[in-house]
Length: 103
Image (cartoon, rainbow, N blue to C red; front, side, top):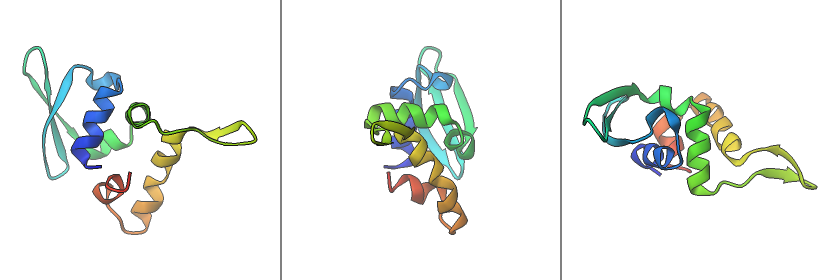
C-alpha cells in the first residue's frame, strides 16, 4: 500500500477529519488534499495523518482488518495492531513510507 492508498482508504472508510476530501499529491512529508465542493486545498504533515487512530480505524474498515482474539476474547482491534507496529518499525530505522508499504 502506498501513502496515497492509505489516505484514500482512510477517506473512503469515513475518516471524519477529511470527509469529502480527495488526495492530490505529496511533496516530501507534506500531503495536499482537496475539498470536493469548493476545490480548496489543505496541507497536512504525513505524521499528523499516521498518528491519528481514526485514520487507521477507517483504513481498517476498508481493508477488513480483523480483530485479534484468543478464545473469543478480543485483545486488540486489527487496525490497532497494525498502527502499534509503526513505532517499532521506526525505532529499527524504517520510515513511515516503508511501513505503509507492508500493509
